[in-house]
Image (cartoon, rainbow, N blue to C red; front, side, top):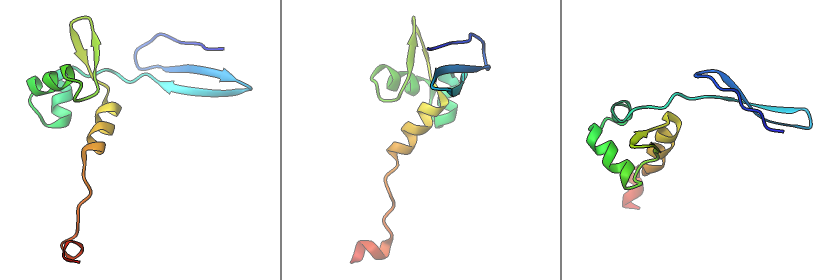
Length: 90
């Protein structure tokens, strides 16, 4: 059985089965300007990356929106591990 509750910023009950309930919190969507602030890039760059599927984004009609958790996960996946100078010489 699946239930959804409408409401901005409210807990939503996603699925219930065998007396186990999973609670999900609705995360507000970011505008391109807010997403660009989070990533420290220009808003036009955020839109260009969204259009080319370079960053995770949601298209609602002609508007692009972003989830903070998706952007943070994407940014973490882009980080390459640092190599210590002593390890590079070995």
